[in-house]
Image (cartoon, rainbow, N blue to C red; front, side, top):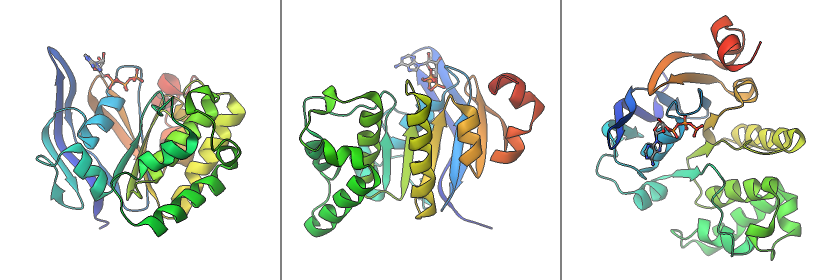
Amino acid sequence: MTSPLISTDNLHVHYGSIHALKGVTFQVNQGEIVSLIGANGAGKTTTLRALSGLIPSTGKIYFQEQDLSKVPTFKRVGLGIAQSPEGRGVFPLMSVEENLEMGAYSRKDKVEIKRDRDMCLELFPRLKERLWQMAGTMSGGEQQMLAISRALMSRPKILLLDEPSLGLAPLIVAQIFDIVKKLNQDGMTILLVEQNARMALKISHRAYVLETGKIVMQDSGSNLLNNDEVRKSYLGV
Ligand code: ATP
């Protein structure tokens, strides 16, 4: 059996009186693209934030079999968990170049950092053209590309992508998904949170469906694309 890169066991998150995650158990294996799909407020973002350590949770999170309970966020980045947040979250007053530098803040291997920076600019030529532009003045699609690149600059073992298609034109969405697929083909493990369930399922090896803080279904991407319930609830057909 494949051993998971990251997994949770009975994960719970509370925001005050709101019980946002109610015992979520799932795993992402090395080399997979796994999606979490579900309606607004189902708990997708909360799951990613718990994995990154940005919010407190109970239950277990394991990364390469290491219990992360007592590992703070910055150390989780060092272990190889990087998140590209919803709404992009780039530093708006910094240039593309500076945002990329920030992504590598925990690293000291200058030569390798330069290599990863060049790899990002090759992956997203638009960023190369805008190297000294302030991130906040770029288009939504460009900011999304930068957010993904910044996450890649920590040289992660798993990339957590929160809603990479949010608010973007269909053509740009297609480009972003192509790059996500390519990253995975080059060996990156990816956990993808998406409202655009169709696009997500198309590129995912496996996916979980979240409903009000609980996983209600899990299967391969292709089986879920053909599942009547999923089609009615999340694909609008
Ligand atoms: P969306 O696509 O809208 O981001 P989601 O599936 O990612 O949806 P979450 O953002 O994880 O859902 O939200 C899960 C639940 O937790 C929702 O009921 C939401 O209202 C609540 N919630 C999320 N963030 C907070 C917060 N900071 N304070 C209070 N409640 C929150």
